[in-house]
Length: 295
Length: 230
Image (cartoon, rainbow over all chains, first blue to last red; front, side, top):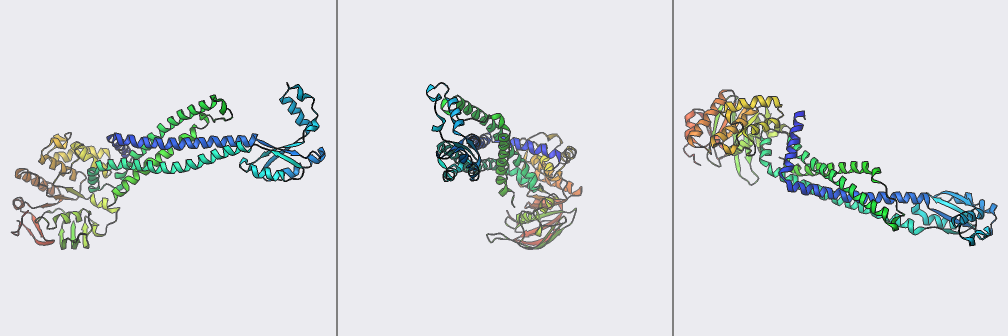
C-alpha cells in the first residue's frame, strides 16, 4: 500500500462512518456496552482475586494441641504439620505467648489479667497456600494425633471463592455473547455502507481495482468504530469504577473489602479495551465485505 | 487484441446465449458489434470483461487468457479495458474530476500522475471546463463523455462501449461516435455494441453481426441482414 493511499482509505472510511450517523452511533454504543460489561465483570473478578490473595496471606487457621502434651511434645508436631499438603507455614505459639497476646488485646479488662496460662492450649498458627482447599487441609490437620481442635473461618473464604468463580464464569459467557453481538452489529453497519457504495464498488471492480483496495476503506471504518467505542468505554469504566470504589470505601459494612485503585489498573484496562475494540471493528467489517468481494 | 475461439455460453437457466463464436479483433481496430436484443451481444461483453466464464472455447484479451484466468489476474486484465455503459454509471455524489480521480486511485496511480492525466483526458472529450461540475448538472451527452473520459483515464488498450448512444438523441449520438473514432485514431482499439443501423452505416467500419448466439456476418461497410430490430 502506497503512502498516498493511506490518507485516501482513512478519509473514505471516516466519511463512510458519518454517512450512516445513526448506525455508526448504534455500532459504537453496542461496542461500548460490550466492553463496559466485560470490563466490569473482569474488574470484579480481579478484585475478588486480590482479596483472596490477601485473605490467604492474612488468614490463618489455629490448630490446638492436646492438653496432655508437654511443650516439648507439642513442639515435636511442627514437622508433621508442615508435611500436610497446602500448608505454607506452621508457627508454634505456647500457652504463655498466647496468654500474653490475649492480655494485650484486652488491656482494660482487669478480669483477664490474672489468668493462669494453663487454661489456654499450646497452638499452631498455620498459613495456607491455597484458601480454596481450606476444608481438606483442616481435615488433614485434625487427623494428626495430638491436635485436639482446629478453628477456621470457612464462610468468609468460601464467600470470596464463590464471588471470584461466579464473576469469572459470567465474565467468560458474557464476553463471548457480547463479542458476537458487537461484531454482528458493526458488520451490519458496514453492510449498509457497502450497499450505499455498490455502484462505486462495481465501477472500481470494472476498472481493475484489487479486492484489497476496495476492502481498505471499510476496514478503516470498522477500525474507527471499534476504537471510538473502546475509548468511550474506557472513560465510562473509569467513572463507574471510581464511583463504586468510593461507595465501598464509605460504607461501614464493607470496610473489610479493599478496592484496588484504578490508577493501578488503567493501563491493562486501556490496552484490553483498545485491542478488543479493534478486533470487534475490523472483524465486523471483514465479515461484512467478505461475501461482497466474491465473483 | 481480442480472440474468441469456439466460445459457447449457456446460463444456469438453460439459455444458450453464445453457440460457437470465433472472431478476432486486432490492436487499433474500430469494430461495431451489432445484433437484435437477445442475440448474445451483452453476453459477449460480459465474457470480455470477465464477469462470466465461457462454458467452452478460449478467450484471449490483451495477452490474458480470460477463459481460465485466476482470481488475482482479473483486476490486471480489466485494467487493459475501458468500459462504457448505456446508463453512464457515474457517481452522482462526486464531481467530474472526482469520478476520474477515484478510478485512477483504484489502480494505484500516484497523485502526481492523476493531476497530470485528468485535465488531459477531459480536454480530449471536450469537457475541460466541467471538471468541478456534478454529473446531474450535465446533459446526457456530456455525462456520456465523462464516462468515456473515465474509461480512457487509465490508458486502456481497448475501449468497450455497450450501447453508448442508447440514451442520446441522434445528433449527440453522432458526436459521441465521432469522439470514439477520434480516440481510435489515437491508437486505442474500440469495440462498440449497438443496434443503431443508421449510425453504423455512416462510419464505414468493420461490422460484426450476431444473431441467436452466432456470427452471421463480419464485413467492412454497412449493417448486413434485414431482420435487425430492437
